[in-house]
Length: 456
Image 1: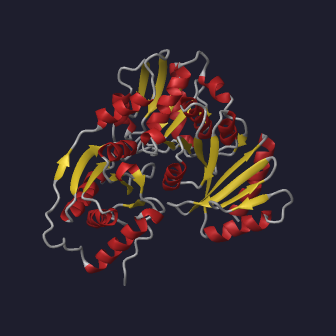
Image 2: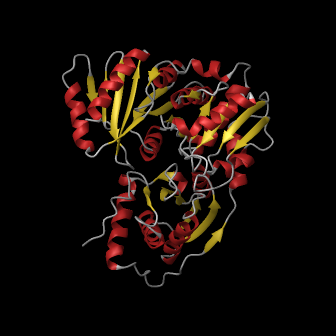
Image 3: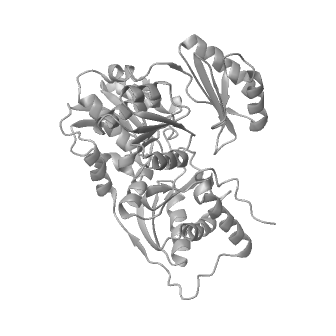
């Protein structure tokens, strides 16, 4: 019987429980399959602070080197630091992280040279097929005459920080007090170097690298995980708070009152800044779950909004196809042309700090013009049969007057005063619902109706 890796090879990464679903022996096969599929003679590898990450990364390196690829290990890093290394060194890369997932999970985010994404349609399905075959037949023998690749180490944190700071000038902003919650993730590794010497009074929270997440899950999109940050911002009288997820490729912002700033508002703010930097023109990518305010702001600032599916590989492909200067997702992923079209929460954070420090008002006032509608946020429901529940939602709204449906990603229903999207998670047995409306009452009504259908 053939091996089946479908449970851990997702739409745009590998993700699963260690060692139950995958381990170092499988990581070694993934390393070999990766260099085979991307035809690499050299690669770069980084990892987060999870207990299983160093061993998995080393095993992947062994598999790659065995087939002749030279391996550069950059060690502990954030995911966007790995993308920096892939871009700056022009090498395919692999990052060992499970992002915001609980401690027992780990995963691999892979990219081609220049941080170009590897997803299901761009090599990941072939990597899976090779690894499955080799699980059955045994690891491949190197071709005759193949010399094993070298494995070396390289420090990239300083260069990464310098690159980001070269993209956003913070030297002349007014002094700001910022609370940063690293969630025991990789923000604790990158923030001290990136923020060093800037006019920032940094109040650190949970900077100790600890992949068991002793304080809270490193997923700032879940409201319970930013409670500590909100309280600390208010207690310190800080200008803002920033939370990073486990691999620090996403950032989440709270204002001076401790109130969350919607990622869509951050997308709109950064889009306006990037368009201004680009002479008031350019394409901005937004996924279909970002607020109506994002395409509105983009058009108001002379740009062209392009709507796309959820997920980093889809956004990056669209960035490359359209030559977009910036892209944002509802999940607080932010993508920059100046960063090889890759996502970097740190660069988005620098933009927010520059925008806030470049004027005298509080953050709540600054973002109010970018946050225009009532939103549910993302609501997850665990369901046994995703397909059946989606069908029930579709049936309820198919013939409703004034409602249009589209299936770009899951199901989106749009009316004059509201829209919602419901889609299956790529990584968990969940249906995810997002609702937005012109007022709170309408949003609540549509949200409750959709949730009752989703939950049966």
